[in-house]
Image (cartoon, rainbow, N blue to C red; front, side):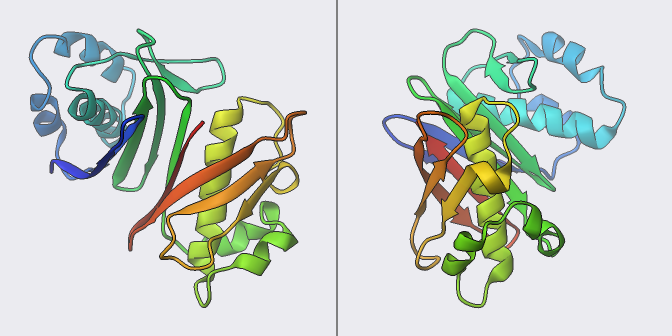
Length: 211
């Protein structure tokens, strides 16, 4: 399907792709010029699902920017545009891909499938003072938002040895009708603050920020 959801402002834009197409249909969405170069990147994957995910990210990026771009990766695994024309962040979860780009600002994005498993691992990343702000009668969404927001901070910090429970703090919104959260990190000497936006969908939660 085309873009599942899209947002654009003066400083950044993001898009979500719902992956329903087979490989050939995805590939046909790209202009003929440049496809061969993408095929070289796809060849390193043997799993059909992984090949489709890899390609869907590039198709989504093409839909957002209107031109094909090569994505490179730092030693840490963080993606960036090979031509350095914009800042980039990528995330994917079961059935969905998310991309955010900005020409002048660092960005971070994360998308997480809604699932109960988060209840079993919450103690590893949720602080006691964060539980005060849990959304009423929606523990799973609260836990997913905290995890997702911390993933976004982690992507923006570019620091090693970050403990999600010790070094990152998320203040959940008073209710799910609000559109952003106030977050902080204690890993660096500057102790940065972040305003992290979020989207709640029946299938997933998504968070993003521009710094």
